[in-house]
Amino acid sequence: MDDLRGQIELLSSVNRKLMKDVKMLHLICETSNSAFLYYNYEEDTVQTIANWDYFFDFQVKSREDFSRFYDCVEEKYVTPLKEALFIEKRGMRSTAIDVKMKDGRMWVEVEITIVYDEEGHPADKIIRFKDVTKFNSQNDELTYMAYYDLLTGLYNRNYFVRLLGEFVRRAKEEERKVAVMFIDLDDFRRMSDELGIIIGDEIVQTFGQFLAELEDENIVISHFNGDIFCIGVYHPYGDRSVESVYARISERLQRPFRLSSGQEIFLTISVGIAEYPEAASDTLDLINCAEIVMFRAKENGKGRIQYFDGSILEDFLKNVTIENKLKEAVFSQNFTLYFQPQFHTADRILRGVEALIRWKDETGKSIKPDVFIPIAEKNGTIVPIGTWVMEESARIYAEWKKKYHYAMILSLNISAIQYKQPDFVDKVMKILGKYDISPEEIELEITETILIDNFKEVTEKLVTLRNIGVKISLDDFGTGYSSLSYLKGLPIDTLKVDKSFIDTVITDENTRIITESIIYMVKKLGFETIAEGVETQEQFDYLSAIDCDNIQGYYLGRPMPPEEIEELLAEMLV
Ligand code: C2E
Ligand code: CA
Ligand code: CA
Image (cartoon, rainbow, N blue to C red; front, side, top):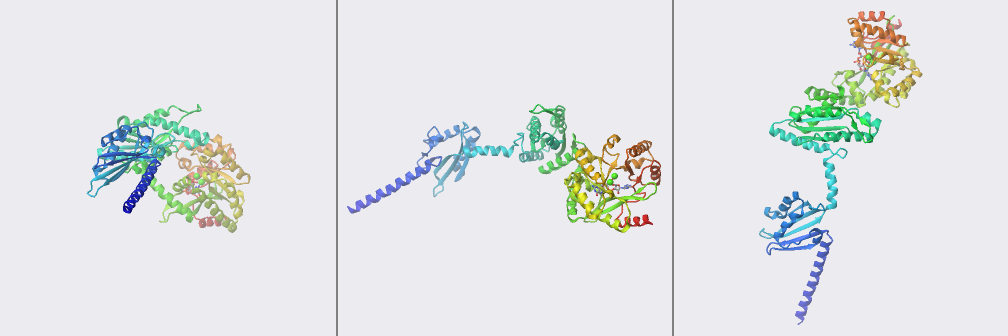
């Protein structure tokens, strides 16, 4: 009897525990935001648990009913879902797949787990349905951002690279070409400075929307960033040839783009073209090549198209090498200074010297300032280089002064970038103070290009410097605008007639007439004149005859190291 009671108690305690477990299980399921389907292979039975009604408005009673799931999801998920639901056919244990419900109402994660028996036959299948809408709709946006550029709706750079990679892969198989057009809006920086960033964005957007019209299955269009667009063309041929795509764009650019403010804007673009397999066989290289040739199109005067050509790449690589070496040279101040004498024409007495920078790279090879100064201007190293030139030449000049007491002028070439530095005037003053040089002994050479882009800013600084006595000289006169009438308004003292005039002044009648009238007019305006690049006695005599004030050139003196200038100074004093 006791035995039986004992057994009953044991049973009911087991039962209580079981009930508790079942309750706990249900609670867990109910609160899991999920619904479960349990299928037993041996009995061929289906059981559904937890929030079934939240997901489905039908019941699943048997295996056959599984097909009802297919009707609930969007078309493209049907096949993947079928495969996932029956993974046991492939001997798999578990998988999960996200499907979008047909009414677009929610994203459901379907997780399938198969339990196998000891012999390896499937015994139980558990399918869990979970609402992942919140997560996936955020994902939708992320997916969008992964492929598209938000401003223009065009493909972004990353995705473009993938699509282009696909073109290249196909082209390899089918022995076709792929063209990349790298497009940059001309003067975009200036436009956005003048009109504001918002309008700048609108311009990019409007142009991007136009480009989108060119898209077809073999043309992909992307917006990289800023004002840069890239087009990939598979098998560029016929009306899909690069020329005809460019022609369609050019035709549109004839007409202005209308902005929301009603304002109308004309755009021009610079385009670089590189083709697979000619330029490169790697996708990124191809884009880089197109970009490099685009820069050439810009240098050649904007509003142009430039096709890839090996020599452009070579030049570019050479410049990159120089650029890297230049940065090191700035760091180790690996430059020297030469000075070229300038003489008064009348008595051949030394007027002054022009400081000219010299640079030998670590292999001892000289690199011409004509080559590296433009690079230094582009990458900003011209600022420390220019400061070094001012400081070092002032130091050398001060030594000469102490030693020879010879009154003369130190001419310095100053780049536009240096004038733009807010502390430029201060820097000049400081150096003058440090070496005890009076402002009248210094002449700063500027070129016309400086004035074209920053007229007001630069002339203000020039006026300040001139007011304290520093001389300003206009270098390379004749190579730029060269309008004599505009000279009148400039704060300058000296004008240097460019070597290109002197070169042909003897042989070419026209040059002679022009040179003569320049010198005549310039002197009338009250400026001092210097002829540059005078190489022969004939040139000298002629310039002397037309009353050019000063002569600089190989005929009277090449650029030379400071020691040789000292010899010259010693000569001048005897
Ligand atoms: P630039 O200011 O026009 O300097 C005159 C150039 O003509 C110098 O070339 C000089 O060596 C060369 N030259 C002088 N007389 C003759 C001649 O009779 N015949 C020939 N064929 N050439 C002559 P360099 O030294 O190679 O300098 C080239 C340019 O580099 C300069 O042209 C100047 O624009 C720039 N540069 C040189 N040093 C500096 C510098 O310290 N700072 C800046 N910003 N630019 C510099
Ligand atoms: Ca010069
Ligand atoms: Ca010059």
